[in-house]
Amino acid sequence: MHIAGRFKPLMSAALIMGSLFLSSSAWADNVVTDQIGRTVHVPDTVHRVVILQHQTLNIAVQLGEMDKVVGVLESWKKQLGANFVRLAPALPKLPTPGDLTKVNIEDLLSLKPDVVFVTSYAPADMIKQIESAGLPVIAISMIDVPPEEAVKLNPTVKDEPAAIDSGFAKSVRLIANVLDNKDRGEALITAATQSRKLVSERLAGIEPAQRVPVYMANPDLYTYGRGKYTGLMMERAGAHNVADSVTGYTQVTMEDVLKWNPAVIFVQERYPTVITDIKTTPAWSTIDAVKNGRVYLMPEYAKAWGHPMPEAMALGELWMAKTLYPERFADIDMQAKADAYYRQFYGVDYIAPAQ
Image 1 (spheres, rainbow, N blue to C red):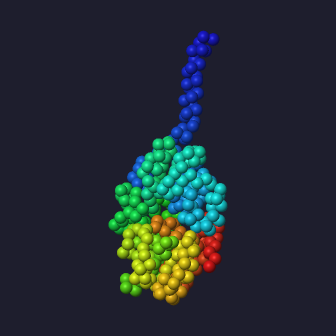
Image 2: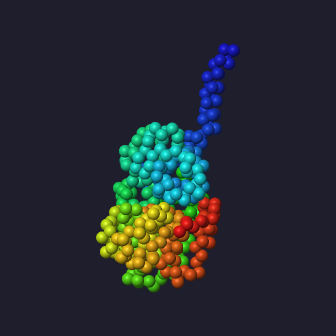
């Protein structure tokens, strides 16, 4: 009995070490670098995620990983549009412990997330508060710029096509890596460029002076200038962004829009009331786009946001080019292309918004 007692502590230690070995996956670390240059240790297997950025949320839905999402940003409906809920029916039921630039740390902790995604321009003290609570935080920018620029809402971008394409791919890979769905992430990246060559070939020969002058109308006279994906989307679609004299996402004046006098005005699907405002407000009536009935509510997939989205690159650039130059794309069936994309990444056919 005395000998057996001597071996009891050794047996207990062996059992503990064995259990640690068997559960090593729970201790495993996935070390990633986020898009503001921070090294972040996340669990090798992530089960619970809070997403406080709508671009990341949009990508998570397309990755088929919404079952891991336990909390989202407060403004998801405004940012993604009211119709997006049909693609992610769980959204209205999910807690909202914060938003793009704020967090309720008690509410966040109550969700017990394994990782928290935030936007790259989230305040530094917000990120620090979450980190100090022991939660891994990953900042996503969707654009490849130095960390000191990535933390800005309107970063300085030297080579927009390269920075946006590279930043998009890095973002998708980072999100897919953390959510453990790398293959689906690569499929999204591949799909994003599937129409690029076609659009480029069909628009060959259009001189800069022949490009259609276009304005992107957001609520309260906000628009996108240089350094945002919207301008690159227009460029690839054969348009000239009339607001390219301003930088980033910014508010302009009615005098600016009157001076620019765009031939076409686009409005994102998430802001349908802007269409009504433009068509019913006298100040807009002298603008060529309004006089000629060329004010368009964009389809859901043509996300002309400041940051690139997979469907915007895969479908939106093609849709915009076809809208501006219909004779060059007469054979392109956008409904068929949208249906194919939506079935692959959303699991449903594309439903056009009611006009």
